[in-house]
Amino acid sequence: MTTNLSTDHSRATLATDDPSFTQVVGTSRGDRSSSFDLNDFAVPDGTEEDWRFTPVKDLAPFFADRIDGTKPLVTAQGIELDVVGREDPRLGTIQAPGDRSSVVAWNSFDEAYVATVAKDAKVEGLIKVEGQGGDPAALHLHIVAEENSEATIVLSHEGDGQVSETVEIDVKDGAQLTFVTVQEWEDEAIHLSNNRIRLGKDSAIRHIVVTLGGKIVRMTTDGEYTATGGDMELLGAYYTDAGQHQEHRLFVKHAAPDCRSNATYKGALQGDGAHAVWVGDVLIEVEATGTDTYELNRNLLLTEGTKADSVPNLEIKTGEIEGAGHASATGRFDDEQLFYLRARGISEDVARRLVVRGFFASLINQIGVPLIQDKLMAAIEVELDQTMAGVQA
Image 1: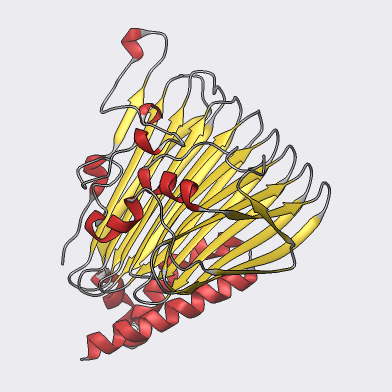
Image 2: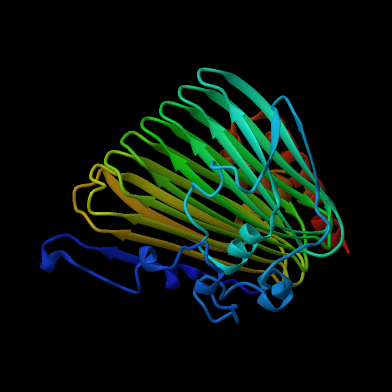
């Protein structure tokens, strides 16, 4: 079994106007490029910081100048989707792409989908993306939660195919948005997704990622604050099977005072070649006084042949904050817990299930969307059936 305790790769940076207070390790996340110009990003070869854990050879078509493959089918329930041309002024207003595949996706769409939650409205909606197979295609969605609205929007992915997706999320002043993206792709699907979030004054988002399927899934989530009082809760759960690569990268930029962010991601891995990557970057700018932030990643290795890379990074440019921290741990199934349960008359099958359920329980309870909680628990049970079949064999 390969256990990769990637806290060795973590970076902590503290900087204030007082040179004696400055501790710098590594380069600043804020210095990395973001642009809509493809010429600003070379084709990655896997040595770059943003791509060093990614199987870039398998993603070569996504780095071309443009991708024009079979587009997925997009439908909606409970929320209206407007189909607009790329000249729509709302598009491209939530930050700029931070890597080459995201710029290619931006260059490649002709039509985009826009979902708007009206001011003061309360909405629950489902957006369903069904892959249709074929070569890589671009998908662009723009979601707006207007002032003082409350909404829960689930973005569900399934089917087969190769999709490079951009999701722009604009949470206006006083709005409260729960956004859930679920990846339940078929075994050979490839999915790249860049979620770009902007929070207004006293607004809040619960951004929830559930990754359960696909050959390669790489999700990058970038969040920024435009005014005081913003609250960003980033939750993620993933179950990585044999031969799958699941990668989740976060970048939270605190550039406004008195804002909060919290990231909690948990994953379980099983089967030969299962590879999970989690990278969390938090940057606190000089002007972001009163910031409160924390990020946590936990990985549970259930079988031999799995690998998890976990890299928390924290960069602080002001000493006037409420709190900041990160934690990361990766380890195999705890035999002591298993022994403790079996010593009390619990069978090995039930004991293993209890340990894994307990690992995910606190995170699942935070999701707050019953449909997603039930879906995740059901998926965990299916995966546990496979694990137990392998153990008994």
